[in-house]
Image 1 (cartoon, rainbow, N blue to C red):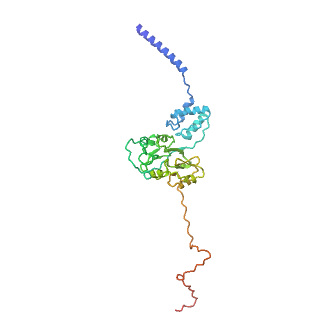
Image 2: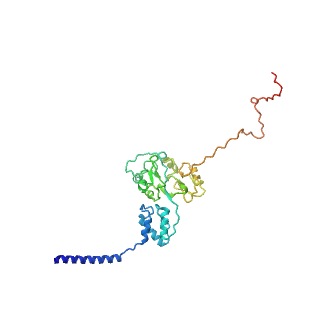
Image 3: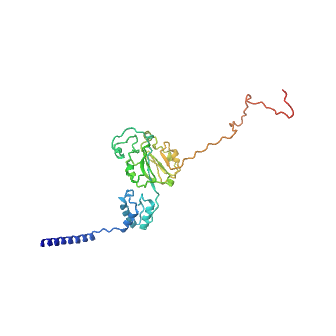
Length: 320
């Protein structure tokens, strides 16, 4: 009996000492958490997609709170929640939020099966990363889309799908949150986040091939050949050519579409625009004749001139 009592007393003492040590450690090494973190995290969508550049929504919430303490949260945004969520967060932190134009993922490759036919058969791991590591892929273009769907697997919102006819990924604007996961997943940097544009209209070069003109044209019919015709046509200095490839700056582009008509290969795409109106043909004037040179009299052909017929007078019959 004394043995059991002594054991209980010893164990109770050890528990008491451990509790005191834990209490002292919790007070000394306590990490104070800002209560605003939880409030900001509640406003975020919780997708944890990483499109904001931070490890999940908790990382963005921490950055937003620290930015508010520093006096500015410019440059911090949640691509999934968009302007609506960021406005609520800014109001919660007592900060002013600059309006940012929404973006959308754009596939800058028009190497369809028709424009860029296959030259070899790839027999290996069916991913874009693996195929890119092995070489140029199944076509002669070492820059174009590989069509294995790494971007489709990376998208958490089902906004990308591979078109079986063209073999290229297509983006659903209604579902795209511009999180940038597809951009990171593409090993050839074909997908780009661009401004959605007014009424969803955009003008961009749908090619990333940096080969010289003849080689690019041989690999793909719709490739940019770096001819510079679009550069000469643009009056707003929105187009630059680097490494045989044209690029349209969305900040400077006024969407006049003159570059689209100037491109000889059709590499420039004007997306979501209404069809161009064809100019009606000028109608020819009735009775118009070929103009004759001034100062020269034209003699009528006697064989074609009809003799003048005099009208009959009333009351007289023509004699036969």
